[in-house]
Amino acid sequence: MSNSGPKENHRRLYELAETQGGYFTAHQAESLGYRANKRNYHVGAGNWVREARGIYRLTLFPRPERPDLLRWWLWSRDRSGEPRGVYSHQTALDLHDLTDLMPARIDMTVPKGFRRSAPIPAILRLHYDEVHSGEIETIHAVPVTCALRTILDLRQSGEVSPDLLQAAMQEGLRLGKISQAQIQAASRNRKWEKPMAEISRGWAG
Image 1: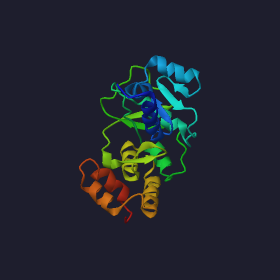
Image 2: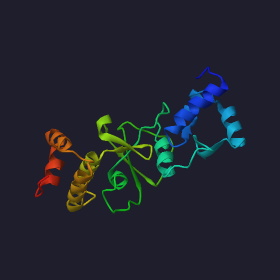
Image 3: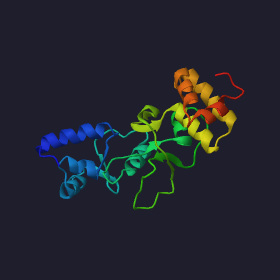
Image 4: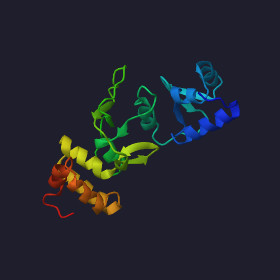
C-alpha cells in the first residue's frame, strides 16, 4: 500500500498505465493508494472508465490500437494480481504479421498452475505451458511469444499446416524476426528439436 500523497500516487498510476496502454487493474491501483471508495470516486468523476470487473482505463489516455488485447491480458491476473498470460499460437502469428489466417478465438498461454475462479470467457483459448522471458516480445503493449516460439507451438499443436509454418519461418527470417542463432538453439533444445526438424524438413533454412 502506498503512503505517498495524492499527486505522487497519480503520477505513479499514470506511469504504470502508460506501459499498459492506459489500462490498469484494481489491485494495481490499490497498491498505489486507491482503495475501493477512491476508485469509485474516480469512475464517478469521469477520470477513469471501468472497462471490466477489476479493470480500469484512464479516460484521457489515448485509446490503444488493440484495447481488446490489453483487457484480456489484464484478465489473466493471478491471485497476487499480476497478469500472467502471453499471447501465443495463431493469435501471435497474426500479431507478428506472418499469416493471413484470421483466428476466431484469442490464444493465450498461461502457466500450468494458472487458475481463475470465474469461467474462462468463450473468446479465449488458453494453453498451459511455461514461456521463458527470452521467448517473449512486446507488441501493442502486451506480451507475445516470439516468432520462432509461436511457430514451434503451432507445429506441436498441429492446428496449422506445415506448408504455412514453413512459409511463416521464411518470412520471419526475411523480416529479421527469426535469427539463425534462434533456430540453432531450438534445434538443440530437447523440447523443440522434433518440431524444429519437422518444420525444416525439405527446406534449407
